[in-house]
Image (cartoon, rainbow, N blue to C red; front, side, top):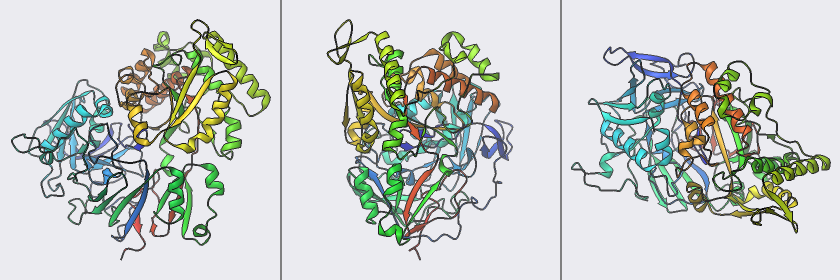
Length: 609
């Protein structure tokens, strides 16, 4: 399952088990209205609404939100450019997820789907009522056009859908996706999360291009979703307006949701400026990512008077394994040397930084599935050991006899010992001290690199790390750039080291190729930030994708986690299992679903009539 793309949560549902039968058709399998990762879908076909949705929620009012950086496009297809936040309000997918189940899917643009026994394809049947905001019906041709465009023009989608060879209209309301392999249990579902765009907006009936699908644009693209683009102030703000004629307003997956009359995003230069605007009431909702501010920065009058509510909830993180890390670019020397990468890990004193800079509020990330039952620990055993044995010649020998353990700092003695270990590793890698500088013993070239950031607040953690690196003779510098420049450089792998985050689902699958697979290592726009190209990693990803049952999936994921950690590809940072939010009393919510906040869809305005 693809749960996150770096800076924007992208939900895609994986796993294929216990589909709910809609109707039978022996020509290509049963039609299903829903499916769940494990067991059966919680909701019957005729359910009225999600349990966590409030069918009596009033419609209207305004929701004001924040974003950082800027935007220059309303086109979600090309991976380049800065897309406006909130486009998911305008464009819909074939299926949608329930937030009180683990990876359950229900019909949205599609009313059902079916697949043959060998999983060589999947066919979706569109809802006959589905239409775009200009009144045109959503057709199989729109789905095919959207798939072809995303795969051709967006590196992340191209990698994610690389085993989906084609899409074709196979009926008046049916579209079939064909796969180049059989037995891949995830493929029938990941295409269900394809955003569908209107072909007629981009091309005339004769195929003449009206709007270039490959280009950035600030024109208001027609969508089928509950909102339409209302006003655009380029780079500054964008407002979405609830479509009174939205075709899916009364669908059970939408009842009690999509309540705000308008949703407006205001763009700010950085998070500190944005927070001050939140304090002043400029916008309504805030996700707090800084522990120190959460502990000491909410003593302003609106909090004391009850106008701003604070909540720390685990719900959105219950299905996510978080790895936040500093990521060296393994495509570049000397980061391509494992000894160097290990030395960089020893130089990061998490315990001291956590105490001095982070109010002791975090736990160290020790797994790519941190906080879940998919995280590796101890020595491998059982099926995990069997899987590792099957690729023994492709993975580090240490994975069989040495548990992954991050160095511990926090005291002067521990810090000194860790730096000594780091220096020994660097010396083994061919570096030596000359005049206080660490240089390559053969070339005399200094060990110097740049840490690229797009958020100045991260410097509170990075600068103490830089000081430790200087004690080793490494000349590390920090550069903070705007979001646009940062994303462009990341897309092109133009960096020495960056700060990134992966949010892994409890159902890992094909997206792992995009994160760590050899094919994505040099594919611009992929999320293989570290530049990992390793046959052992590739083999373990295959075992995840083709796992026959949950136990095998868990074992294969632990094996992959163990090997990624053993190769020291990244410098693990930290994370919290609480999701910290604050909001003004102009908005409110019902009971949260088990695995999310259903924000903003399930919230509503207290000022709506």
